[in-house]
Image (cartoon, rainbow, N blue to C red; front, side):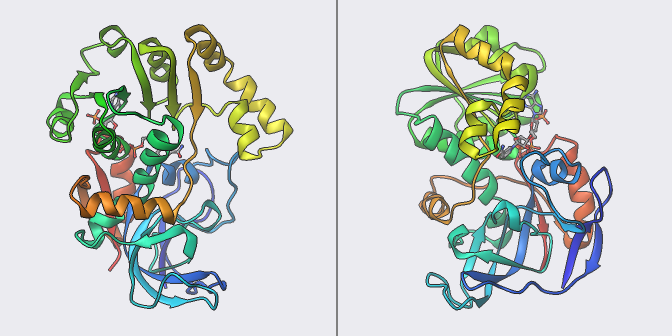
Length: 332
Ligand SMILES: NC(=O)c1ccc[n+]([C@@H]2O[C@H](COP(=O)([O-])OP(=O)(O)OC[C@H]3O[C@@H](n4cnc5c(N)ncnc54)[C@H](OP(=O)(O)O)[C@@H]3O)[C@@H](O)[C@H]2O)c1
């Protein structure tokens, strides 16, 4: 099969390679991939930035979510059959969606939302699961609560705004002028132009923050939260609590604890809870998300679709950090 691979960690371009189609395990299906989406995790993995959390063998096929069709099923697969149209985020040890086929565990898959094209469906799994896990599993966002979602025009932000509105929250978000109309159309109640305004001076007494930017922006986000509120970040530093829950072992947990000491101090100062989220695959949650999409409650936002041969260009476009919604690679 054809696949886009990198040969080593670092800022190396992907190359198109001919490699054997994967064998499937008894609980896996072989999926014929129709479309995949680009996520910043692709270039973070390539750059070796997530080595502390997951290590990969080279050459490595990048790509962390997709839509496609079941081409073969393992002997113990019970929930899917050949011909099913599916979408998924494979588990971290089995990534590689910039390819014609992938072997994937049936627990990680759901049927693709019927009202979406393959390109639209491929845009959903990683950002949909990330938003769902942040807002539901960690923040337990309630009707009437106020949430700040950082970078509302991005892949995660465009999904998270719609989900937060669906959950009955009031949503503030940061965007540049170029993203303002988009986030408004998704339901954002307050839009802060991050280039000309300071969100930390404009927002007060928020129940929750969903941060996708990390660094100083995450640190300033603590200022808008009320006592007892919650901050979840997908771009900040993992803390000791994450290390223990993720089973990172003593030394890595100690490292996380030392690196995140500033965030721990901010937690205490503002009486809020900080959680670092490293999203997980889940076919079950993708089924819930498919239902939101099929009932018209959430719509994918696509910035651009690239042909398979141009996957490297798609990656470079994503790396510019300016995408409005999702970038898709059409595989077939
Ligand atoms: N830990 C996890 O499990 C996990 C899961 C998913 C994502 N993530 C991380 O979350 C981050 C966001 O992912 P994504 O897919 O949403 O990225 P993305 O689509 O590339 O985000 C691009 C968007 O960010 C906006 N932006 C950039 N700087 C901003 C700022 N200072 N304030 C407000 N908006 C800003 C840009 O708007 P303008 O062009 O208008 O400036 C653009 O619309 C990435 O770092 C990714 O790795 C982590």
